[in-house]
Image (cartoon, rainbow over all chains, first blue to last red; front, side, top):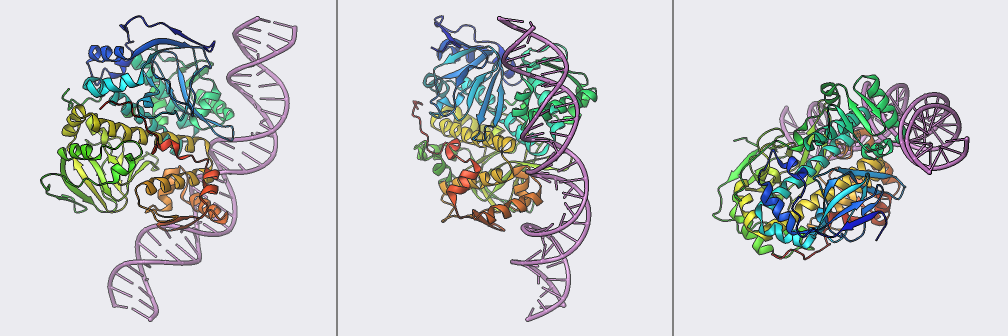
Length: 259
Length: 259
DNA sequence: CGTGTCCTTGAGGTCCCTCAAAGGCGGTGG
DNA sequence: CCACCGCCTTTGAGGGACCTCAAGGACACG
């Protein structure tokens, strides 16, 4: 096995699927224990990756589904021109390669940005579980819809917001996501992304990202240090970005499923 | 009721849910009849909309789920600046407001671009059906994943492709989607979008869309006439766009669900 | 103290934007 | 049948946002 990857033998049953997934779901759904138990049944192993390790290459067969416990993962595509577009950023509590239940091959690279700890789940088992456990299906449907919301909003950003707005928007988004996971203190965000990463998220050049961070800094909105972004004025940053956290649906609840 | 909308009383049971959904699913899934029957149970009415009618406004409560039978629907967001970003284009066989099973309010406007005929489905009933009929859940999971693929690829386009590539890409995508629905003959696409619509899909200005179409025309790749796009050289257009239809997953099949 | 990674700064260029106006083209009505 | 109108598209001119190329600075690490 690749040196940058390690896999520990399964501890019998996964009795400690992290709470991160359920923090995301908390405003929407409460059957944590039932979902946790279901997920446990598909558990294969805990896996860990070093920074830079490819968890799932694009164009290759899916290996499993992963639930991130610790660390950041980037889902991206490289173009022939050499450019890269990062489609989304996966945080603890997010699933990776969820489409492994449906498709054979991945369209995107999934690369660990930090050291990553994840729960590796057997896709066929997971699919079967979803078909038979409505509460699990519901939780996953929410997670999917949440992610689709992120993608839609990113499209709006890339299409119709300028560099400052886009940059401000992604910072607001990360702040809310990290906050709901409890991975934040105060207004300082530990973000393990380089400005080159931001460039490939925001569809900009690395150099213009640098200038944009500087501009936001001089407006008194943020300070940027490698790995640490501090937001000094949340309302103004959100106003500049045209940010409204509603699209992530962390709180909006609807009890129409009869599980 | 709004003049631009009409609703016909339910014909007892929906015995003719269109084949469009199943054409999309054909490469992946074959239980058409079972799925059709399930959907029928949530059927409320056939609804039709005139061009320009709002099927579901953003920020308002979802009214129902819709399955498009005829016509084009644009899902979009208006920004404070007055700009509009079209997030996706819904065609026959596509679901609208699928998140009505999960969330209360819509994040986007859903506007009929042409005259639209759709099947209106009761969201709570639909949710319950999905929880109890695995084949329906599977079909919908595929449809969701398909749409997420479209969104991801749009992000790549907006972030890292230039005007020509982006424009070519969306034309290639529409050609494949219309083709699989059987809504195409030869290389001529009946596309009821104005150049202003293309601009809001592609994150460009109307004027630059016009110039870009002209450039593609002069390269001998397409001809553009209001409502009708003809692709003269599919391979070259796809090459220019960096287009690979794989991301739509029309053919990739995986039988790991035990339904 | 060298080396690698990341960030910053400058200069020049280009892609795409905005503003302004004119040219099809189908529909409608006299 | 022509005039008119509204919608859409095209063209031109000028400007600005962002890009590329190039090089230097800051910082961590061995």
